[in-house]
Length: 324
Length: 316
Ligand SMILES: Nc1ncnc2c1ncn2[C@@H]1O[C@H](COP(=O)(O)OP(=O)(O)OP(=O)(O)O)[C@@H](O)[C@H]1O
Ligand SMILES: [Mg+2]
Image (tube, rainbow over all chains, first blue to last red; front, top):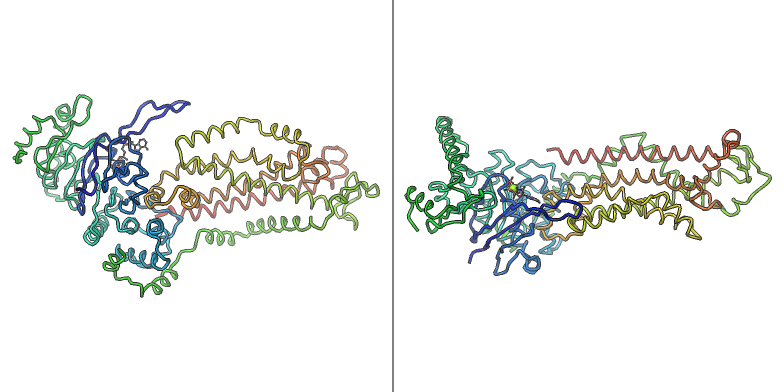
């Protein structure tokens, strides 16, 4: 059994208008997605801005009211609040937020911030609690001095490590990492990602790693789902996604990874323009008449893509993949 | 599970005391301390604060030594006595009643009402705004319709009607009546900030940390809008002194046997008093001007100081 099983998850935001606040329309932020996260793995969820990644992540930690679908954890559907309370669900599933500054209460000291989940879930004695906070600070590479300081006194990278420490505090099984490094510069990104990997090794944590950048995901994730306008367009292993991308949207995302090798800049640019051209010309082939993604089709045991069956098979054989 | 953390960190129970001490040496002063030290640096603000606190204490304590019914008796011998005499420091009014004593008791009454009104209406307005802004959705919608209804009522007229139909009233009932109508401004202000604040990720983080709604509202969000609350309270205090005063001046506030700043200023209704017997109304008018100026000055400094610590919070 997987650690967490997300089945046909939908989150629609009602648009209310008029004096009576009637629902006139809805934003389909997440529109029927299905995937599983295994214990101990890092699952990548990738898509451009507004594709519904954060909404998915927030639904999984229980911050978002789900419209339909289920999220199964330990055999119960945690989209229901009563089930979350019964399990002390958030002791096991925590979140690292995109914006490290706004995710730390500016009026609280670091000790109180990191100890917050401990106080609610573990009820340690005062000394044990302080000890745990100090150990957590040590694990993410911060000095004990940090204890009585405020969030604004730290750099972006340090703040994100405080966010990691808070998420790890109750020794959870799954951490939703919502673009944990996208606000940081490159050198600091690597540092925070390394801490996250180290913690994963030591505590056997799973991550749902959300990002818009396939370059970062490559270093972190074994399995990757590509999200586009609230739906999944491609699911596969790292190998499937990076070496045999089938959906045009995935190819576009791959083409958008910045090329660091200066000599190949021109070639990179040419291939990016080529992909963009195909995308513009062949929209109708890759999306249905409403401009939405097709249902996922399995093309190999690990690889699925949202295309009509015949096109999927054809593309897959072109890519030389083993047929399912 | 604790072993798990022991294993992967060099910090152990033995280091606890030493590390705590190290951290304490590096501790950042709290926001309250920052505000206080900025306050100390501003001499005029300090003076204004002393004037307010000193004056309030003086009238509160002074009024205890004055026998009000006796003071309010008419004394024909003191008819418009000149000020600065040994019997009447600030003169006497048309009933021969000491202006100085009336001023003390009247200030006590007016300021007492203003303080009570500020405490009740601000507490209520802050809670209303916080709850309405935090819960959003239907709760917010319902609470806002109540707010709209209250705003629709003509406030001064309602108060006058209520004061007229209630047979016996005193400072306490008057304060309560005022409170019904004076929480709305605060609640709207607090709600709009709470709406913005609830969107921030630290609120989500508290929810995933298992903290309940009420704790999030009052322990997480409220400290973040504390500067707004402080400033709003000081300014509404200054405003509230005017509320009772204005109504008593019009003759709908405290009964005439109960002195207040408003009833004293009402002496100026008589043209004779304005020109000849200036001491009957001028001290009360001056007092209100000085008090309100001091309070709003303190409010401004508080705002500046709170913003400064806010700026520090925002700077990175
Ligand atoms: N509370 C809300 N009310 C209405 N619409 C919302 C709400 N939250 C998100 N949306 C909409 O849902 C869609 C998905 O939002 P989401 O935040 O999940 O995107 P994202 O993939 O995380 O993007 P980013 O990479 O910019 O963080 C967006 O179109 C957004 O406008
Ligand atoms: Mg997002």
